[in-house]
Image (cartoon, rainbow, N blue to C red):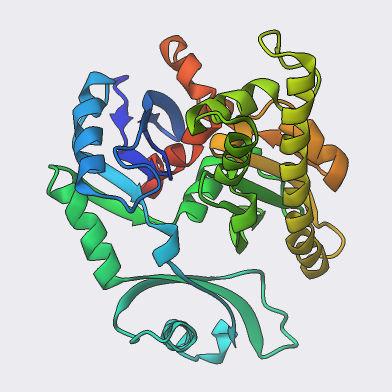
Length: 351
């Protein structure tokens, strides 16, 4: 009577790592069942059969069950657009109009992609149009991507937009409407930001210059150390004075921290434009909370650093902040690089 159903395995492939998460479900309550973060076979390259094969080998050893997976669609292949469409009560074929507009904006045949669309906010009854967000994925790209996993023995239950998975995962920490929450995914190859009003994704933007790989490369060039060592140094030194740096001399620590602060200052500058846009679109509430996920969110002192400069509550978010985690998984569950994988596992409500 107390058995819990297990979700599909959420799989999020980044520039250098693959995150996988599986949850157990009882009623509407999620509990972490299995979690792992493994290095990619070919870092910074397109997803390849070697990635799927490595994932297949690791999952059972890490306690995962089943072959059903929900995978994050490749960000670069997604078609996105913010549209002004007729209000629903007009009787216009909203889905068809959205598809034609997305087709026109991306110069793609209307029947060449899958698409989802939703209203960004309740329409103003005094206007004949409402703001709508549309996202699509070309069939050709989707089929090639799915083939990689299906040939490795997986049953792909869903191909989901990473931004939607991030919103789903962070649900327990989202600010109540009409206040907004910004979710910043600090990845290796790019940093992306989504704005959420209530539980609805209303805006998405990619910030290429703020990628964590850019900072690691800068430290590699400045100090002559490998990329892997640069990542370790960033996560050791961080942005504040409280991090443990006993293995490094003071001059080196200060130099590393200057590089790190300079990188996140550029991130703050890039965040300023979309934050200003969101606050104009939703006057009176605006962005009240900023949640940091992804591999770069683990940098010590990042939350307080962003809070001071942006004037909003900011914090890193890991699976342990979102779902119940058994004691044996708490060590892994504290890594914000696995947060989107948790949101993917929740696709369709689990079960």
